[in-house]
Every structure is written in structure tokens, then in C-alpha cells.
Amino acid sequence: MTDALLTACNLTKQFRSGTQRVPVLDDISLELSRGGSLALTGRSGSGKSTLLNILCGLEAPDAGSVRVLGQQFEGTASNARIESRWATLRRQQIGVVFQEANLMPALSLLDNVRLRARLAGQDQENSQDWLARLDIGELAHRYPDQVSGGQRQRAALAMAFAMKPSLILADEPTGSLDRHTAEAVIEQLFELQSRYGCGLVLATHDSELAARCGQRLDLGHLSRD
Ligand SMILES: Nc1ncnc2c1ncn2[C@@H]1O[C@H](COP(=O)(O)OP(=O)(O)OP(=O)(O)O)[C@@H](O)[C@H]1O
Image (cartoon, rainbow, N blue to C red; front, side):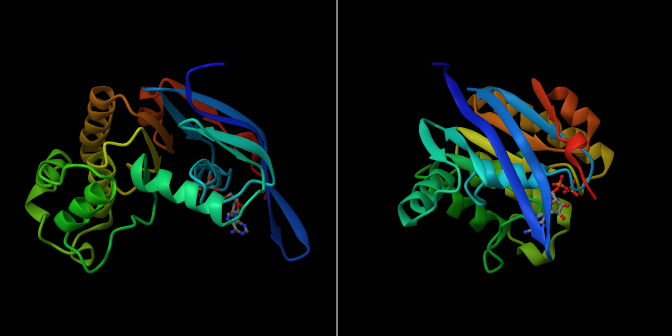
């Protein structure tokens, strides 16, 4: 038995397109230790987001299993109890930072961070500080539709860190950022990751970001158009 934070075994996933089946993931396995980091790379459409969705229970694989934070999830099995186990993990221990940053539109950035911390049972007092670390402290009282896509993305990262999660799953965390801002966010990401010892799985096209991760899984060869 290893002390893995996250293990995925033999994951397979196909989507249907009309009468055709489109294979996206074919026998993918990975393992992440506590405090480890993994970059998912590969060209557009190679399955990075699909894999991230499976790793946090937002999508079920056709076959294979995921073990995360000591909980085992097998293949296509899905019922209310399994959904609820995944939802609890996402609320308390897995910080999910996806391309469509899931901010509540009716709340300011600051209140979004506070809410995320509260739902995870964490202190809300540092919420402003989390935004400042991502260099958007001065935008704390704006609403999500009053900031840019890159600023929303950074707010989503602040929300993930405010949870003090055991694992962060991030889809293109530097995707909407200019080089200078991306470098600053990468620094913060790894500084916070090492300080809090959380695991990190990132889907990215950013070679600099991928190079900072301890492991890399290239899904590129799986792409089929
Ligand atoms: N719900 C769905 N139904 C049908 N096909 C889907 C669905 N979701 C994703 N796909 C297809 O699966 C493939 C993998 O998509 P995915 O979003 O995982 O790729 P990606 O590597 O994250 O791409 P990108 O780098 O562009 O974000 C693509 O061909 C996509 O069109």
C-alpha cells in the first residue's frame, strides 16, 4: 500500500458523437503523493479536462477506478450516496479551479472566497489576504461580471486556497493570463502548495507551468479527430 493522495487506475472514457463513439481516455493510470504535483499536458481535445472531471467525480469513467483521500470510487457506479461522497470531498478537501471559474455571480469576489472557506469549515478572516496574494486584493468588492476572465480565474484560485484543501485540481490556471501575470500566479501557486502541502493536478498548455510540476502525464497521443 502506498501513501498516495490520489490514484487512478485504468481509466477509460468515450463520448458519443451521433452514431460514432469518440475515445478520449484509453487506459489512463496515475498516482500522486501527498504534496506532489502533476501536469496533464496534450493538445486541445486530448482529454485533459475530461480526466480532471473524473478525478473529482464530476464525470464518471466508462471503466477504471479512482482512489482519492482514502476513498475508493469504482468505474461507472453512480448513485445518490456516491454523488454525495464526491460532493463532500469537493466541498471540504478538493479545490476545483476549472475554466469556467465557478464564482457565484451575486456575490463579490471577497464574499465568494469567504463562502468557499466557510463551506469547507475554514477561517474566513484571511479571505482578503488570499485575494491580495493573487494580486486582485483591490478588486475584492467587485462582482464576477465586473472583472476580467483572468481576474476571475485568480479569484477561483484564491477560493481554492481559502479551503485549505488536500488537493487542488486546476484546468488551465494561467490560460487567460499574460506572461507576466502568469509567472506571478505560478510562483504563488507553488509557494502556497509547498507551504500547505496540498497535492496539485494541473491541465495546462503552459510549458513553464508543466516544467514546475514533479510529474507530467502527456495525453497528446490519445487525441483522435
Ligand atoms: N460531453 C461531451 N460530449 C461529447 N464529446 C465531448 C464531451 N466533452 C468533451 N468531449 C470531447 O472529448 C474530447 C476531449 O475533451 P477535453 O475537454 O477533455 O479536452 P482538453 O484536452 O481538455 O482540451 P482543451 O485543451 O482544448 O481544453 C474532445 O474531442 C471533446 O470534443
